Length: 277
Image 1 (cartoon, rainbow, N blue to C red):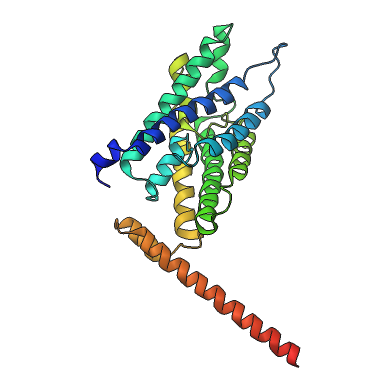
Image 2 (image 1 turned 60 degrees about the vertical axis):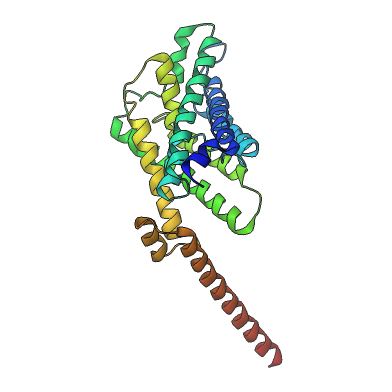
């Protein structure tokens, strides 16, 4: 499909709107669950982790077949790096995700009775945590999230099973539980950008772009070219030289399937021999 045909297609615009709406819903859920209770008590990362995980599961069912329900620029850039997404859609998706996140943060800001409490929406580093530590934990949390996403998608492509939204939702919650008290557990540059634009707080904002993007790209590359059943040196070289990855994938899967069949036949032969003896 040419660039002009892609832009004119209905599916392209449906996917962009799905990313805007999905990001708006996701960010609204996360920020709304971050507000303090009536007695000004903070629940820590518990409520945001549960809200983010459940929102991810729901959005996967709502928009998974339209745009993949990525709602995260780090995920989109990982898909672009591994050539699971073309450049045009990657750029449009990242823009849509940031726009949806900003709209979601703006809506939550408008409904706040006390605007000063909006500062809780912004990812901030605690006094005892430096930028390097926050960067490292954001990379780790995002790595496990994106590795789960790639694993689920790979299983779905091979077996055509349920898309694994629950596993992805649990991974989102685990990431926030892990990094919540250190860096805020963003794992999503759009989640950090939206509140930063609305509130106007930009200190250490770069941490929430570089950390998640690096973690996501490392996760995508390590899964696709080292841990996936279709991983091979030829597939890695095809990606680096801009060749057709799908051909290499098919060949790798075929060899893996042949090996499995051979092993099964050998085990059956040994079993028959034992039974005969």
